[in-house]
Image (cartoon, rainbow, N blue to C red; front, side, top):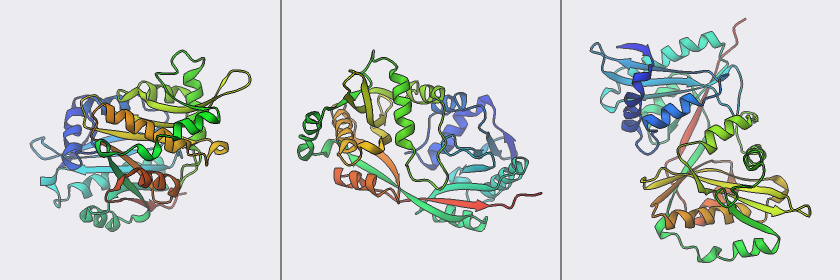
Length: 323
């Protein structure tokens, strides 16, 4: 086995490897390229391929930093090995290669994620010195079976308080719309549970990675707004779906509400609005992820009929900083 750096010609190979490991979560080659090309320049990201002597791909490994939870010495590793080449040292070789490279960045923390029922992956990480930090639930909703009748009055009730639910498409032409959505997203994301403190990201990143995302759907980016005495819109809450036309499932992105507007069922109403849009579009399923400590959002999803899938286990390994 040999390990080499990623090149521009490898996108299809990497996409195929990821699809073979987890077809439900894999990005297409075009999506991988988009995320690579729009990644913040200060974020470290490296991708490597493992190959046999004939140049055939066996697996892929990456290390990266988080924009939303940024720390210069804290990283994530991700390793995917083709099913037919597991238990042959490919994953171990990739991990050793990644950790060696991370020495150049004086890494103090490295995190990894795997699914709770992938016992071989859990054993692999534990043997490599990783320990469980927390769990997150993947949940799925059968969109076409969704019964909206218990929630049909929600939107009208909010209107009585002057709160309206609008999509990005509805708000086209609103002054400074993109900047208002960015500020809402930052405020709503600030309290989302995570072991690391929140890092505010730039407007340019939000505009590029969200509003110019190939999976962005103007009708499925919905917000709650209230018109002030000065006739200016106040943005209260958001809920988003990401979807590529032709796919049978959509993905729930960020759902959050500014602190002062919580407790009014606004997030619930927004999610219902998006579910009804998905139902109208013939989408079969909506997928979402929530940390196990995020009980308010888990409760909303359970109420709507989302069904929990096997949990994703987040692992961490700490390193002593070398002097």
